[in-house]
Image (cartoon, rainbow, N blue to C red; front, side, top):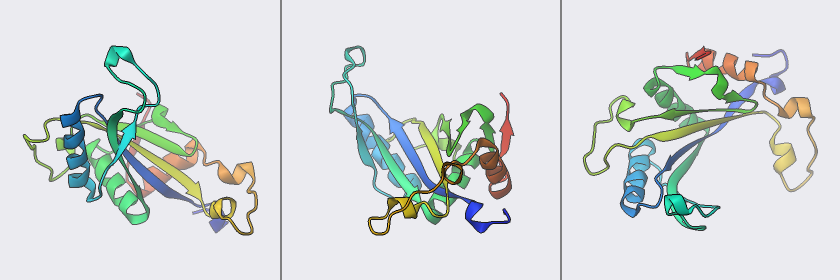
Length: 172
């Protein structure tokens, strides 16, 4: 905790994404998996570009995602880090966020293999912010925060995830 409580960082949101390509059955399976893990309904993700080699056209649904905030985000991040053996690679940490992948959903504690879903992996992206972000986002009495206040550095994120989630950061 910093001397100034406005400098403390918090987990703003957690985005879970499963990319499946152009297969309609895998889309239904990925939505069911996200529902099973988070208890929330997944939103389809849409292709922004055409890629003929992958048989994907612009505007086609190519995956499913869900965004979690507040306590639900922290709880899910704890489960996801546990599924990843509480290890985060240092190169996956950027300013304001970090990302990592989970190869198989059965790595989550208490989740068993479901033959209807098959074997799917997912991407986890955690975004961090400081108090006062709403000041720039609100409609009435909007103001601008300084760059140093908006930027959450890599070292602050490493410190936060090691203390709050007992995660280990490696250089691999």
